[in-house]
Image (cartoon, rainbow, N blue to C red; front, side, top):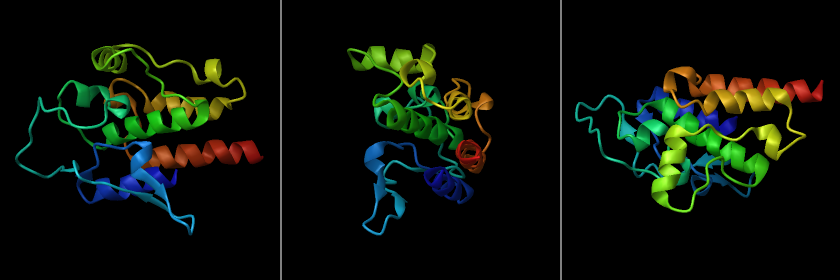
Length: 160
């Protein structure tokens, strides 16, 4: 949720990270979470929007990144949902023997059920991940702060 809030802040500044992955999420010795490496970030207000250019780490890319389409903050949320899925299950949602097959799986095949890989996963957490991993960006959370709120709500429901 903290990472989602951080990327929401970036999005509000007009920046899309485009490479959310575990290696770019750091925990300081003071236990502060930092989102790192904005090296391929894009200003959403830029008039020089390039399509058909694929940038990012394949395992964590969104379907629209793979297709070379224009990306916005919902792409970062898809990537963060991949990270969360991996955190909870020990593996990313999309696996393949080569990069082409991996990109096809991300773009075309449904992600495996969180419950199938982690039977103790709460339904509320599954629902949050399912929403954020939608192939169509319009079906995902509109903003990363909504993703964060849904995550926090699912965790609060566990404590009740």
